[in-house]
Length: 91
Image 1 (tube, rainbow, N blue to C red):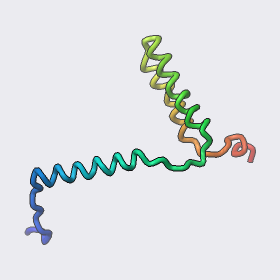
Image 2: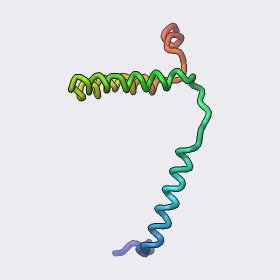
Image 3: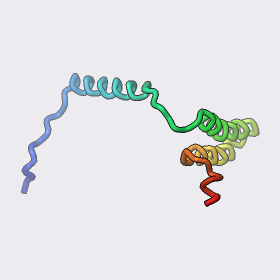
């Protein structure tokens, strides 16, 4: 027993190319949009240092794996909510 859905026609090469161009154009448009943030500029800068410095130290001492594990702390720091942790802990 067959489905009642109509069969899809294969896309032509020009249709695929046009669709790919539209997707790339939309991705580039979204990448270049600057949006306002409620975080101070220090937070992203500190997160970049907290995740990048362990990688540099690990690469310097030829233990990149240790640097990768250590940089997870910086990644966790960057996903913290945009509020002060001290006020959250004092409740």
